[in-house]
Picture 1 (cartoon, helix red, strand yellow):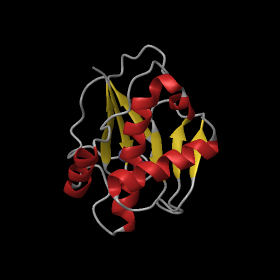
Picture 2 (tube, rainbow, N blue to C red; picture 1 turned 30 degrees about the vertical axis):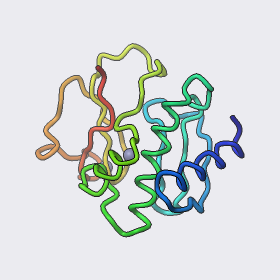
Picture 3 (cartoon, rainbow, N blue to C red; picture 1 turned 60 degrees about the horizontal axis):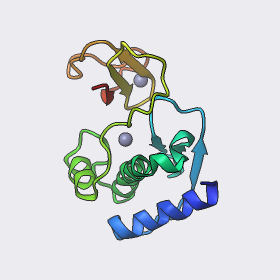
Picture 4 (tube, rainbow, N blue to C red; picture 1 turned 180 degrees about the vertical axis):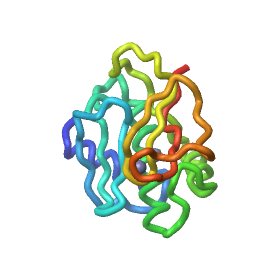
Length: 152
Ligand SMILES: [Zn+2]
Ligand SMILES: [Zn+2]
């Protein structure tokens, strides 16, 4: 799947599941390993992890696109677009988006079972055990940490 086909797929999913158009850009990012995609608040574009463009990951790719579009549409509507918000959880469940990045073995063998990311600066914290995110904050900027992936 190339850039143009991906753009078309995201636009289709947006109309079909969110009943609203996606009017910004999707970019393929081949350097991503821990996350399937990312929505950018500043220019509203979406990055998609290039490893998921293989036909065999089609279902995973659609789950990732729905996840990023959930951020996109809620942010543009001025609603709760962060993972912890009810708006986000509800809409994600409604469209059937994925909660965590599917594990397709991109990372080396992991003993770190939990991956946290700072909501503000996006710095990532792999951890062996679950972290109390009410208590612990980002060491760089003090931002709130959120669990972005959990190994089975
Ligand atoms: Zn997300
Ligand atoms: Zn931070």
